[in-house]
Image 1 (cartoon, rainbow, N blue to C red):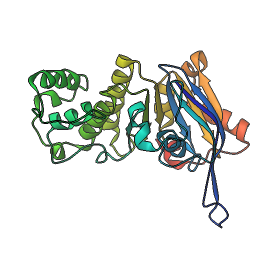
Image 2 (image 1 turned 120 degrees about the vertical axis):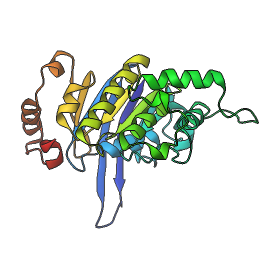
Image 3 (image 1 turned 90 degrees about the horizontal axis):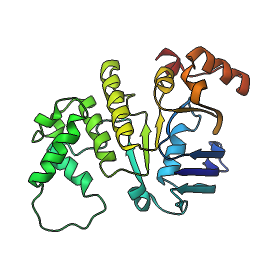
Length: 264
């Protein structure tokens, strides 16, 4: 479903601030893979997601989604393939519009617009059923303005909007980092439910090692713009934070330096 072949990206080339963010990344995701991504500060996690989404062009390599080479396509041309949830809960929704209106916008993404009823009765029923999956009671508040929701509720709604059209790839960029632990757990549980229900191929960047181990069928660790660990199957099921740190130190030759991840 996703192939990254020798992806490189350098920022501020030729200046004192030159940064080699991605250094020849090779990564393949099969259909339905739920991959968690962990790594220290500046490891290239978000940079990799931005490369996939087409936020800026890569220096070299190729990005293939479901057999289509999208390397040269700008972000808006890749939008039909990708669903994305950002770290900031305020990013993915329109605060002055109702919950059902936000869902209608997501459902119509990429389609021709015309003069029709904003939200039909059939759509309302579909949205109500979708919202029940989140287990946050939003199905009974569909006419509420999104700006009245909590950060966790908005993030869960953004997740639903990003997956309403079943994207080829779902990108989750530390989507629970701005939430308190209890709310973050609810959003993660909703994420698991949505991903499993539609068998979505997913990349989830997180700073929380326990979450990276507990969720998904595969874990990759990045360091200095490369994938240095790729753990799946039975090995991932029995993985611990201590073991993960030990493997990182063996491969990289250095200690894992990210207080936010270690304290989570």
